Image (cartoon, rainbow, N blue to C red; front, side, top):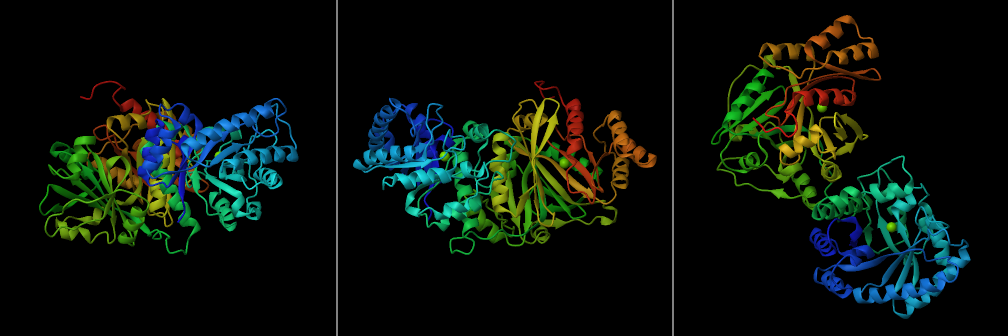
Amino acid sequence: MTKRSIATVSLSGALDEKLRAIAAAGFDEVEIFENDLLSFSGSPRDVGQLCRDLGLAICAFQPFRDFEGMPEPQRTRNFARAERKFDLMQELQTELLLVCSNISPASLGGIDRAAADFHELGERAGRRGLRVGFEALAWGKHVNDYRDAWEIVRRADHKAIGVILDSFHALAPSFPVTAIQSIPADKIFLVQLADAPKLGLDVLSWSRHFRCFPGQGDLPVVAFMESVLATGYKGPWSLEIFNDQFRAGSAVRTATDGLRSLILLEDQLAKASVDALQPKAQSRGVGFIEFAVNETKATDLAVLLGQLGFRKTGAHRSKDVERWSQGGIDLVINCEPDGFAHSHYVTHGPGVCAIAVDVDDAGKTMARAEALKARTFYQPVGPGELEIPAIHGVGGSLLYFLESAGKNWDVDFEPLRSDASTDRLSVVDHISQSMPYDEMLSWLLFYTGILDLQRLPQMEIADPVGLVQSQALINGNQSLRVVLNGSSATRTLSNRFISEFFGSGVQHIAFSCDDIFAAVAEMRKRGASFLKIPENYYDDVEAKYGLDAETMSALRDNQILYDREGDGEFFQIYTHSFDERFFFEIVERRNYQGFGAANAGIRLAAQTREARPAGMPRM
Ligand code: MG
Ligand code: MG
């Protein structure tokens, strides 16, 4: 069994809060960051005791800076300083000190000089039964490559001196990781793990602000860990994440995400082993989307759905719940006065309370989700009702796993006949969820860990009052697309949605069709009305793409937006927002894979014009 660890610096809060969150998430060990200890009111003995009470071993105390290669008198002072840290470590009851490579301009180069310093430090540590690990910082003055740190450790030739490997410091500067395989396992005292998104930043700012958990970034952490495991290393896998969002967010959520990322990493490295997770089930699209509303809003929503061409196709046998369908799309309107949907409505107002994903094996998906510490959901079902396995998803909504989408309806619903021949919309194209930016990485790991979803490149979208990050996830056969929108600017529409919805949630649902012009014409005939797009936009499209006059006037007259990538074309149109909570989008894809990111700013500006000014009370 891997020993799973995390550095206290990765989380928000006071040291005792961090430790409790780390223990609650299920970690075995912890690295105590010196600053967390210094700013804490309890003594090192208290902290050591708290860790033992919580069942957490302390795998390292860190960091000890600017040690190797110093001239006198700093050199002598450094040994005295180290002795004081050793005292403190003995009070904490931890045996490993992390020394990171020197960044002081006063430090001197020379592998042998550094090795001699470490040999002497090893003597001092060894006398107390302690050990010292040396870590190369990517921005160290003389030592910035783990291969040099290892060479210094090798020449120091002391059993109390070893090397500490950090995936960020090896991978961010693109050092080859295969050289790790030649380090003897007993000389690797600790392995620290972090991922990071690819950014054009200097490595120090990149490390200090944008590290993230393995699987959330773009670094080849799996290849790094393959090399580590090839040595026979059996020590802890310790997450060390410096990230502004993590330090602003909830310690409990961050700790849980960290553990989930380690489980996923172990799984990627242990494909065939007995403790591997259930493989990901194959997703086959959206089974249904459920809206929680009250009776008045249910009527309004039914009117809107009717205008979009949906037909009422079922009435629940015992509950105030309706099924509305079109093509392969099923929507559920739930205004039951109790149960999960009702409590969602009370907490969040009208909106999506559940999404059912159609998968080839719901049991396998649930087992995998549970192994990844997702919270499962159970609600008592009435006699003869179908129980659908579910977990808690974004913003208190549910994620159902439906194995045989379509077959569920006859059990719970009285079917109603209607004419399907006029259906224009075919399937759910994508579901877009808004969340605070600090939650985005969390839900990214959730979706990609549990389901067979891959990340598309992250996009930045300009809202009139700030930036929104947009991360699309897609499955292999493109039947399931989820878009996560995260904003940290408080007045963006995405963030206003979050504050008014009282949490994260579905902001829009896009339906696809084969002929958007015909579909929209019929919707307008039924009374539908769409978001007003400014004339300037169409002048720009005309100039940019040179479309024929007929297409241009069809776009203009219908308020349809247009985008092109390569020879692919995309058409999209938006409804007004429903009760200021969510809206629908109709799209037509012609060999086009994106989401119309080029138009998102236009859409957001148009919606902002239609929205009640920020701070105005709801009518
Ligand atoms: Mg480190
Ligand atoms: Mg969209």
